[in-house]
Image (cartoon, rainbow, N blue to C red):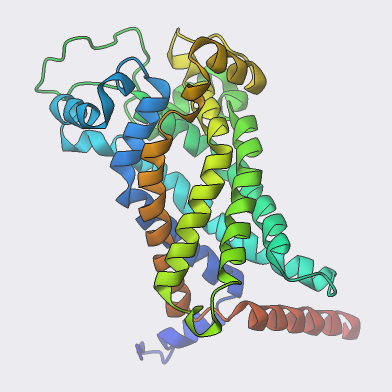
Length: 335
């Protein structure tokens, strides 16, 4: 047990932390590690979605070669700083909000069925909450990843000069805000919400539904959790992927003269009419390659962090929160 000179132990500090704080930390660490692990695939996926003529036409291998030749190894991580800066608070809020919404529903409606439908509702609202708080960072990440530039020691032919190039996260934030204010920082948030509500809900729904069919003695097996989570992520992503494509197109609209679409529905129809409905699933196969390891790593790290931070089980957490509320109410009455 780690112990400081003043007698305060590490376990004591962990034990004094509220449950929601532990869930925030566990979710944030899990999100950051998982996102960094699949950053190269995320960069290529965004380029597939937004630069079809340049990258989708040359395929995955050609795209990897082009990025490596023109931008070097760091090119695969362009925009990852903004991505991690977004995913850490996003994942932290997502996991914590899901657990909190789930507890609130059970405490408010004790007779509610504690099945996958509960996870569908809690997951949907948790996803929406996380998106609203972190969307500007997602917008900045997409704009930075959309840029294709050469490294300082390379002379790249065909560089697109008419596009706005951002120097980094702060510069992108500043210029976007100057151009369109808060509205600019939340451009494309509508399809994000349309997509995250069903995706987050379905992901938790499929995960809990699959786990309900696992024998009790195997439910704590990490491999089982990773398998259930990966399949749930794949199913949820497939159903909601077209909205992700629409969101990316709207986010980079101001950086390209190729699209004049105004809103979510307009953009969706324009993509289907001008580029074909198949483009609404552009990069989906690559996304599958990204989702499986991402979900696997995310679940592993989240479970490990919860164990490290001594987060109680869901049933124990509900009892602890209910007891805390009762104590607070009693104290208020005495006061």
